[in-house]
Length: 74
Image 1 (cartoon, rainbow, N blue to C red):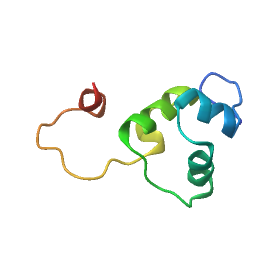
Image 2 (image 1 turned 90 degrees about the vertical axis):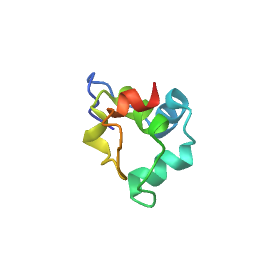
Image 3 (image 1 turned 45 degrees about the vertical axis):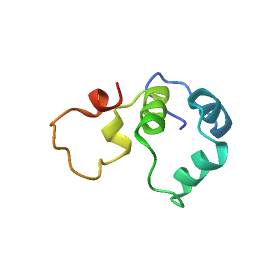
Image 4 (image 1 turned 135 degrees about the vertical axis):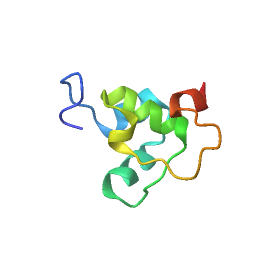
């Protein structure tokens, strides 16, 4: 989180506040204690740090509609 897509750094607390994700959840993701997150929270985190969603997470499950991840949450 020292080198986000926009060149700024972000702390766990700042990321949590900006994305409405609990700081403990952000910390658990960083340490690997937690590996999954719902699509809305995952998208918010990726957007805040300025990277594509698929850089951070791999989708699980199957898509019967062929919709993109962004379309699925819209």
